[in-house]
Image (tube, rainbow, N blue to C red; front, side, top):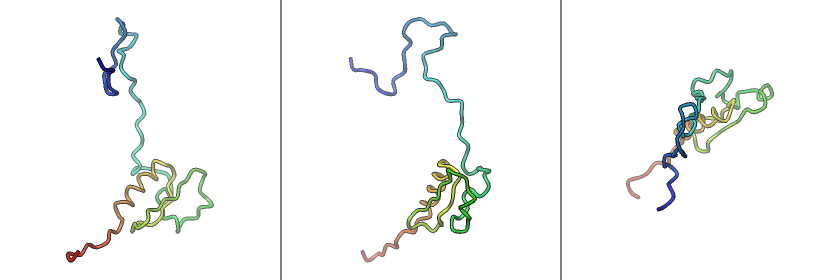
Length: 100
């Protein structure tokens, strides 16, 4: 018999009472904040129009090559990831001619 796969259910090793748990993996109690609802001032502002000397450590400047969206400053990696995804949606694609 082959070993169980990565997604196989964990089987308890013997009888357990309700106080000992069920043998399942723990569930995370934290839910990440939605980046679109970030309340940090200046998060997502255009980087060229922003005085970066007043920003705290940990801020990220992000830009996507070919995007119509300008470089922006983000307060965290989570917000920066959200910004990169939006900028990638705004990349100018070269026009495809019917002659090719």
